[in-house]
Image 1 (cartoon, rainbow, N blue to C red):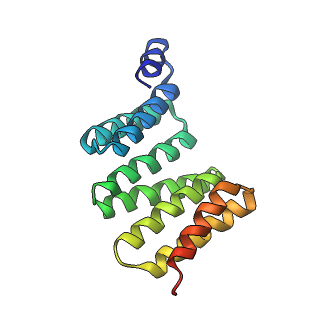
Image 2 (image 1 turned 30 degrees about the horizontal axis):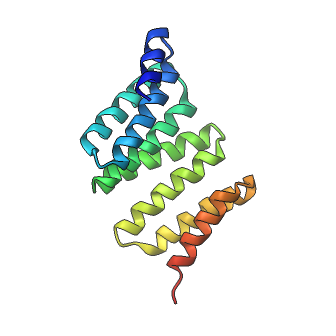
Image 3 (image 1 turned 180 degrees about the vertical axis):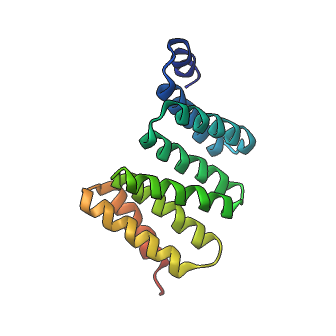
Length: 150
């Protein structure tokens, strides 16, 4: 990732640089380096906004929100998920809408609102089904099954 980042910077490819930073942020988040992840995601967002690519911006917003949520800042994460959802709707990017809906669902589930969480997961599942995204269908269906009253 670091090598790709250096190459993208050297050739002046803003989209590539933002994408590499975004993935680096995901890696740092997954290893528990939340301060590093937040910094990298913030830089990715700044760069992708300079590039003008709103599709990539919605993608970076969602990953940034997930990192913020992992730190426990749920209201801040929700605002970014909602921004990403609005943007992906405007751009007619349904796969990203579903990812944003899952993030919103995670917010509601983490903050004690399982009804809203379940509803947002159902909406995400419907999009994945419409798009034929089998792995995502199975993953979200399993999440919903785990939330169903026993």
